[in-house]
Length: 267
Image 1 (cartoon, helix red, strand yellow):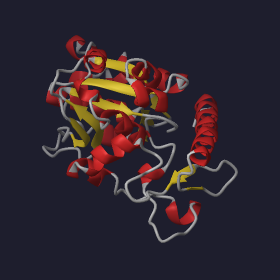
Image 2: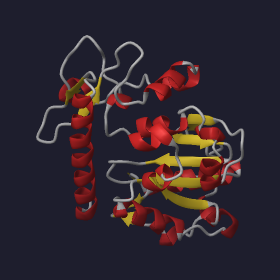
Image 3: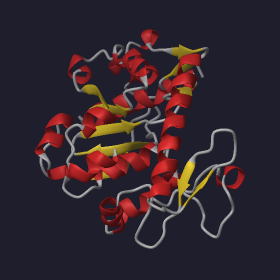
């Protein structure tokens, strides 16, 4: 990880954990902290409440089967980093989860009917939120990529980031295996990390936008200048002008400016 990314990541993670510790203790929310020098707050659901979500959001998620399934992904470091309890820790229990933050916003009642939010994102009224969208990006072999996009909202694909260090690197063999790579990108100009391509998630999502005739937005914290630069390094390599103008970046802070009441205060 570049030194700048490590710095931005650690600073944001520290601030989020301090804020969440204060938030959880003030509201007496069930939570624990991970082991290690920089403990992360992880919330335990209790009945109809989950400290990592607003009550209104959590109720909306519980009432939607597709959204509810999203909560079930097991925390990858649960056994090594978290206290053992009768409850099995999930990834969206963590205060640093970008997926939890994404659901807090777009599952909140009324958000997808708010003209200011829809206008900012450039999506139409009536658009539905599909988390973990299976984009099935075409491969040169005739098969399809099996990875997911964080959120499909109407004709907009969204990749959400918070404390993640980067957009992943991938081998040249895998990246060059995408059917439309040469049509969409100036391959020689794409960013590299040694022999691998840097910003793999971004390339894959731009290709998904091409395949589904969608726009693509990266949603990140305004303090993550490193992630913004990584996105620009990929975006400027998009050859097709009609696709390049459908690529954008938005910050959580910019989004919160058009949100209403309790959700804005929570963010």
